[in-house]
Amino acid sequence: MFQDFGLIETRYTSELDKNQPSLEEKVTEDAIQFGAEDVEIVDVTNAAVNFFCSPVLLSGLSRTLEQNGYSIENSEHVFTPNNLVLLAEDEQKAYDAFVQKLRLVPGLEDIYDNVE
Image 1 (cartoon, rainbow, N blue to C red):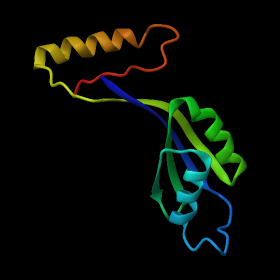
Image 2 (image 1 turned 60 degrees about the vertical axis):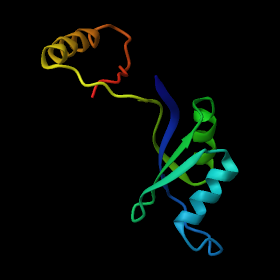
Image 3 (image 1 turned 90 degrees about the vertical axis):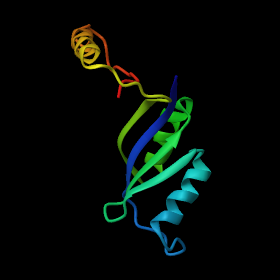
């Protein structure tokens, strides 16, 4: 129903090594070395980089990245739906009301759904 993964949003704050000609090469090498499943450069100018990993590795990978020149902007366990559903107008109104009430539940951190 959902695909889950760890997402770590970072900025590379250290100077690039003269042996590393590009940010892309550096972050790709770090992703492989530190155990990330994938890496995405969001903004080359600001050295904004997203690392993707297994949720089990999220906190450990965040610490490792921080120890190796990355500033952690955000890290979270993300759920994305495999299939989206489109609700009829009356169903959407009922669903929106339900979600609004659900958000009032103490301790609820986030709601994941597959509604388009």
